[in-house]
Image 1: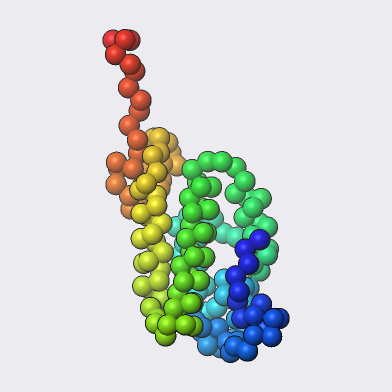
Image 2: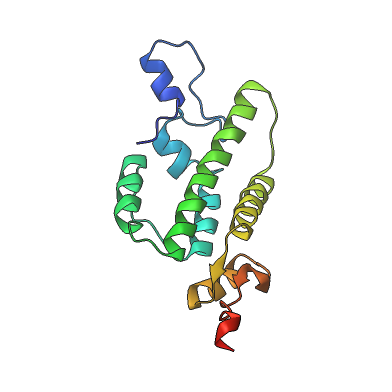
Amino acid sequence: MVRLSTLDRSSMRDVPLPRVCHYCNLVDESHDHLFFSCSFIRPLWIHLQDTCKFRSPASSWSGFVNWASHQWARRNLRMAVNKLMLSTTINKIWMERNNRAFKNRRCSQMELLRRITDLIRQKLLTLQVRDSVDARRLILEWNLPVSFIRPPLEPPDCFN
């Protein structure tokens, strides 16, 4: 289980901090709000879930982690991309939250989405992927170059 020190957790340790969400400034910050119901973050998740072609039925942080750990247990390209999207998105949402909380720096919703998708694309481009239906779909979904797919193995010269 990921343990991010959201303001709901900090308040349990009597840390005197304002508890309002650093994105929407409307609701007390919690994992569930930050990752599921914040009006600033929710459209990012919807866009990324659409790109990755899945829809989580979970409505809470713990429910999502439980759902994802069961749904994404298989080892294939699609599940690896979903895990990459999840870890990258959580990281970028948290980094932007900390920039807002501690450095008084903000980026727009579109800029945050661009940063997330750019980082996912960069990480995808480091993979060496064999040609498959999933690999070809990823090229389209993430606007990757065809060189993303590794060419088939050449037989050794001794077979020629």
